[in-house]
Length: 316
Image (cartoon, rainbow, N blue to C red; front, side):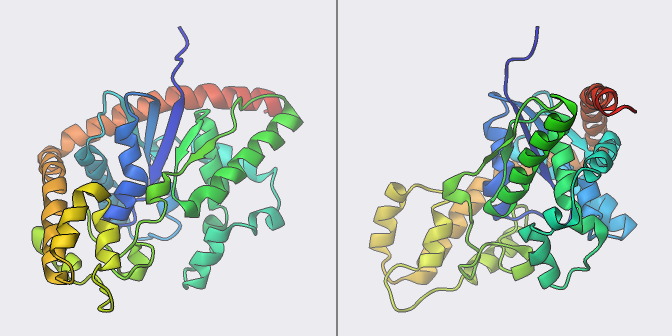
């Protein structure tokens, strides 16, 4: 019987430790929807290779991202968790799609411009990022793609590739992916009020130590002109509802240190069970490797089937 569940796909680059913006903006959705959808959770190490060119760093980061996914509550019995590089069909489909797009079309990508403006080398791989992302999505006929606002354009580019391929070669990719953007966390604020980002050095680490998280929280920029510290409150709303916070912020009006300490307590209460689960998996790297291998095996079944159809369509 054909699986009637919709397919969700999400990937995270192993380029460093995740922060709470990564968690609320994308990672959490894999846990929230793992019972509702067929979920593919990818560690997109091909994407990471566009900027990470150190063997040990890439390998260690890949393992750590697996721990991060498992730590937040991703159930490997429900989520197909795997490394992108363990399914080589992704790179093959990327090449085939590359032959259907133009340089001017790819030049529209905002993310490429943003990264090169920050001094990141304009490699061909970085330029081609949207096509590999499209291959990731199209490989599994994924319909739901949880992303932040900065990745919305890439999902639209994947939709355009579905139309282009199907028009030229016949229906091969039956669905156009939809970006799932959780509006309340589309842009998670950082310590300075800008979008939380490692490149801005304004993050709260998801799996940091108590001291690291305390240091980050206590350094949140506050505006002394008002009773309510906007940056503190904006982050606090991620962990508690506005109704839950109303009395606290009224009682502690103008007491910024007290409010930061309350935020710190709520963050630590929230992440402590996740951190404990992550530490248990970290003690058993063989088990983590087995989970990734099993996930890759499941993903390859679908990928091989899809690429057989693609080959037939284009004449390979």
